[in-house]
Length: 203
Image 1 (cartoon, rainbow, N blue to C red):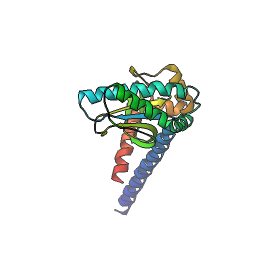
Image 2 (image 1 turned 120 degrees about the vertical axis):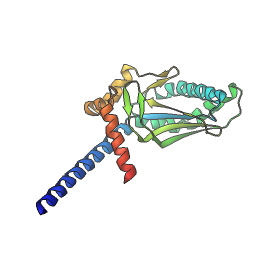
Image 3 (image 1 turned 30 degrees about the vertical axis):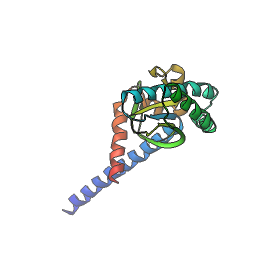
Image 4 (image 1 turned 90 degrees about the horizontal axis):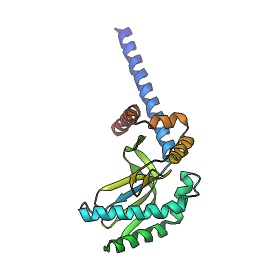
């Protein structure tokens, strides 16, 4: 009986050690991924068709303005710094677009660290977690969200696109192992990070 109990304890200890190792590794990976990108989060005033259409117009205007700002960015950290230094400029551009579209909503742009869910961009999966981002809140900010990545550019006025240049920038920043983990629509990676999310919620 004692041997059985000792065996069970050993199995439980082994499983807990494996889980702890997986959680630690996944957290470290997510943190490194978060350091390698600057994300974009646009929140519409409401879910009405008009407000959702306005959200896209504001998104396009900000992306267009940001393209020239980020053209010499050497890293996601550099892009975030540039976005922060030009926050008022981007905010005024967004406000100008809102007025051009015939609305008088307020708009607020924040550059900081925000929570993101799991998202796929082409065949790239970004796990949930905290990311540096440019967040645009239009009016009441009660409508559906639009999520993307500003650096390296994974979104454009046409939607979700990822050029070969953006892929190589991300690959160099992450390293081959981590890039392969989140690319090719890896369901194993999605499941791994999902398990970590569940464990964290339990803890």
